[in-house]
Image 1 (cartoon, rainbow, N blue to C red):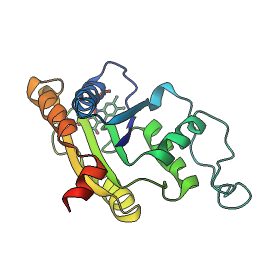
Image 2: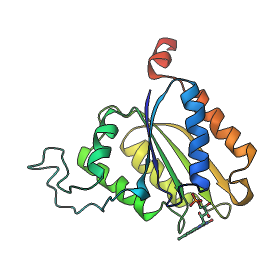
Image 3: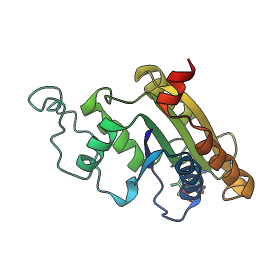
Image 4: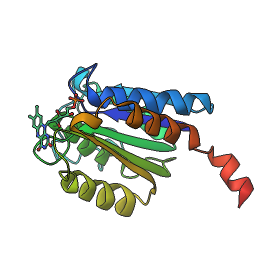
Length: 182
Ligand SMILES: Cc1cc2nc3c(=O)[nH]c(=O)nc-3n(C[C@H](O)[C@H](O)[C@H](O)COP(=O)(O)O)c2cc1C
């Protein structure tokens, strides 16, 4: 299946990247087609609420920044993975800008599943990000929850967590395989 991972960490070799890499390794072993976008290495501004996308733009965002390269991948993706360090009990600002820009597409055409990967310094700091994930992605976009994975403090980059994420990637079924089973 086509999977888009939005990595909201500004640290290319940071804790979130390690979790994402492990997930990608597992998912690739299972033949999934994955695109990882390091959102902080891109120039993605926040939504302007100009409504061009819902009027003259017919689903296209007026802002000509790096979000334009993500839209086609997002339109094709069957699963989205939001990965972020926890900043002030939520996603990083850069990831939030990218999430807000999904507005132009309303519901991305092929998206059916979602997962959440969070890294933090402390435990029990995930409610803000989980609230947004559940309400905006699972309920509003009607996506199936494939799992929420968290790592705090020493769990970050630990063998145990990386194995867990790799296993998660490996366990994902292709949508066609799942439909055959049902
Ligand atoms: C601006 C900022 C805000 C943060 N806010 C929190 C927080 O609210 N709770 C927490 O547990 N950790 C917080 N942290 C720590 C990061 O979530 C943690 O170090 C994480 O593992 C970093 O992931 P990365 O290596 O992918 O950047 C914050 C770090 C920064 C730089």
